[in-house]
Length: 244
Image (cartoon, rainbow, N blue to C red; front, top):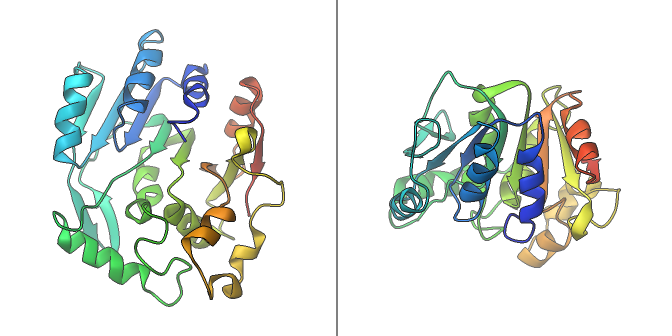
């Protein structure tokens, strides 16, 4: 999403309600872009990176200072969930989920635990690599919720396996609302994905079908009945629609 719509990310971070950002998975484009925008507002961005190569690369591209850092984080498996070892009393206005990533050779134990977790008979997502990436983020919404302010909102950058999990896990709860970005062909209709709640949809699941019926390439999440997403996206003139 970020690679094909840098303007959307920049417009979000430029908004008056956004001054502090937490990024799960640093990005050559996203980290530099958000820091650049926030600098003029005296805001800051913390990026959590689990990959050694990208941690070193991003610290060369984005020199750390007091408020802007790429922090090396470790993945931990706790209570059947994949979390990061970073913790803080800080809260953030905006959280971008575009990580972590699991290398099955380097992180074999974590990879195997995710495979076992996603094979659970009650989960929509069955095979680990169902969407070519993203299952590693399945628990990141639960993880980052500890850093929420009242009006915090999350953007999940594609990562379909994670989005499907969030929709299934929190559907019907009073915890989160989910929205998709309508503009730029991210979604083609306002009748979003209601059929995925049917077991029949998952009887013959393949990559092509998942991509074709994706809920959105940019999924927005906030606390239930919070108007923050409506307010921000109205101000930046981008259409959003509520998911399931």
